[in-house]
Image 1 (cartoon, rainbow, N blue to C red):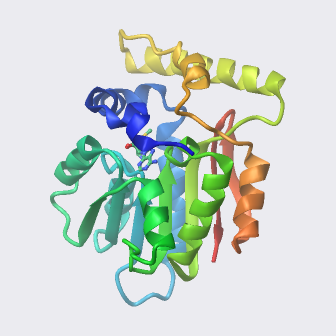
Image 2: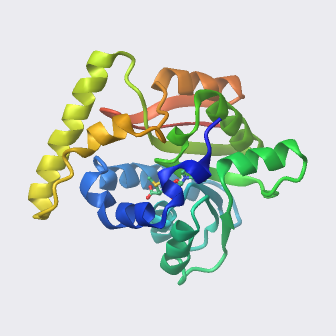
Image 3: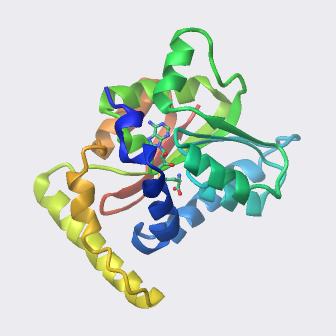
Length: 247
Ligand SMILES: C[S@@+](CC[C@H](N)C(=O)[O-])C[C@H]1O[C@@H](n2cnc3c(N)ncnc32)[C@H](O)[C@@H]1O
């Protein structure tokens, strides 16, 4: 079983480094956010709901993802969860101008435990559950349990959308995807005119014992197995993907 407390994310400096540099080395980060916003506008904002939309952001980091949605709809009632107190502190500061925001300092493992012990931390039903670059820290069995947890916390007709890194079906492709990612970082660094070089990062990602990416098909199957409908991959570029489903 994975342990958040033993991972790099439990360290303050790790959180700080991500917040400062994610735009340089997360492949097509802006586009990932743009797709999420398009999804939100198409499926939720233009829906018939006559109340604020309830969003749950799992592994929220500094709140970047929720912040993008709030630019589209400042009435959102958002709940942000993260295991890192440093990240939540950043999220609190970034989302300070907005009301109706709830912050929960808990690991995914503790959320799952609370549900099984019938002392569930999250009582709300959500219209949209989002996550970005966090769920790949769980093993496949844990991912399956977590997808089921997410399903149980969605309102009927609600959506789950996960931006995450996935494993290629074969090693040959995995190696090329890492090269592709390095090439993208190289180009992005030139465009942003930054001095620090992050082209080593795809290899570090592969060797980091905190990362447990699984292949896309296994995750789509896991979503279907817990009850999700309309399961699909909405975007993929090398190891980066956006996938999800509807309750
Ligand atoms: C790569 S950051 C992404 C942050 C944010 N979602 C974004 O895209 O900017 C991963 C986040 O997931 C959180 N995280 C990782 N594993 C977790 C776990 N098991 N339970 C709770 N949070 C976790 C980390 O603390 C970190 O804030």
